[in-house]
Length: 439
Ligand code: PXG
Ligand code: PLP
Image (cartoon, rainbow, N blue to C red):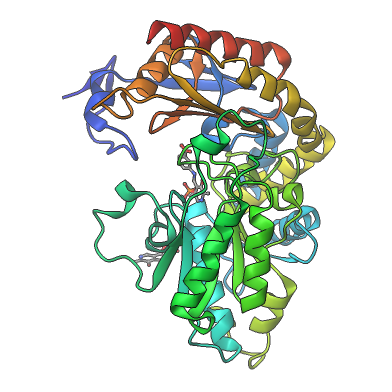
C-alpha cells in the first residue's frame, strides 16, 4: 500500500502517469495562487506550464472564483438539451466575438478530446447533408495530439497513444510532421524551412481522391509532441489545398487558444482561417472543465436546412454548456479583456524568446523553440534511455521550485499569461542549474 502522511494513494489510477513511480515518490500540491503552486509542506513551486497549458489567467483569480461560487449557489445544473440558461448563450456570443471572422457558432463540450470528436463528426455530417456522403476520410498528421477519444487517437500521430487500441477509426491518413533539426534548429518563432511539406496533402488527395476526404485536422502549433512550430507559409498552403479540393480544415487550438500565441487564437496570429476550431483549456482558464467547437456560418447553415422540428446534429454531452463552466468561461473572458492578457503575451514574446534562447550552449541542448508564451528545450536523449534525460531535469526543477512539462526528451514551457520578468529569470536560472546538474 502506498501512503503519504495520512493519505492512501492506492485507489486512484492516475492518468498518463507511471503510477508505480509516482506512488513511490509522490508530489502533492495543496493550493495555488497566481503564478505559484504550494505543496503540502508549503514549498512554493513556480508554475511554468499554466497547470497543463490551461490556467492562462493564473491560479485562483478572485474574479473567476467568485463567479463560480455565485453560480453554484444559484443554478448548479441544467441540461442544454431542449432547455437553456442565459450564461451559455452569453458565452457563445462572447467567444465567437473574439474568434476569427466567420466562425460564428460555438458548440460546447467538456474537454479537448470531446471537442475533437465533435469537430470530426460535424465534418462528416456536413458533407453528408450536402449530398457528398462519400467524403468520409479524415486526415491527421504524424506527431499530432488530438486528445484520447477514438476519433482523436485515430487522427493523432503519437504511436504510444495508438498502438494498444486496436484498429481505431477506418479511413484515416496522416500528413508528415514538420519537425526537422537539420534545417530549423534554434529558429526564433516560425522556422523558415518546410512549407512544402503541406504539399504532401496533394499526394494524399491523389491517392484517395478528393471526393473521399472530409477534413484535415492539425494543431497550428503541435504541443504535446514537443512544441513543433509550423514552418512559415505551411498553414496557408494547407488552407489553399483544402479549398481547392472542397476539404474542411480543422485547427485544433486546445493549447494555442486564448492568448497563448499573443492573439485570441493562433488562426488570427498566423492569418489563416479554418472551417472549424476546437478549443478547451484556456476557455475557462482551467477552473472548470470545458471545451468547444467554433464552426463557420457556412457549416452551421448547412445543418439548419432540414425540417425545422428535427434535431439537426445528433450529438451532445450531459454537461454540454454546464452552468459552472459557462460562468467560469464568462469571468475568464472578462479577465482576459480587462487585463489585456492576449496583448500582454505578445508584448512578452521577445523577452520570453530571448530568455529561452539564452539556454543555447548548455549541456545536451540540441534545439530551442519559442512563439508567444510557448517555449521548448529539446535535449539529446541518453542512448538507450529515451525520456530519461528530460525526466531527470523535471525532477530536479521540481525539487528546486519550478514546474515544467516534458514530452519525450523535450521540455515544454507555457506559463500563465500574467508572467513577469522576475518569473522568466527564475525559470531560466532554475533550468540552467538543472541542465548542468543532470549533464
Ligand atoms: N487537442 C490538443 C491539441 C491538445 O493539446 C487535447 C486535444 C485534449 O484535451 P483534453 O482536455 O481532453 O486533455 C489536447 C490536450 C502536454 C499535454 O503535456 C497536453 C494536453 C493534454 C495533456 C498533456 O502537452 N493537451
Ligand atoms: N453512459 C450512460 C449509461 C449514460 O446514460 C450517458 C448519458 O446519459 C452516458 C454514458 C454519456 O455521458 P455524458 O453525456 O456525460 O458524456
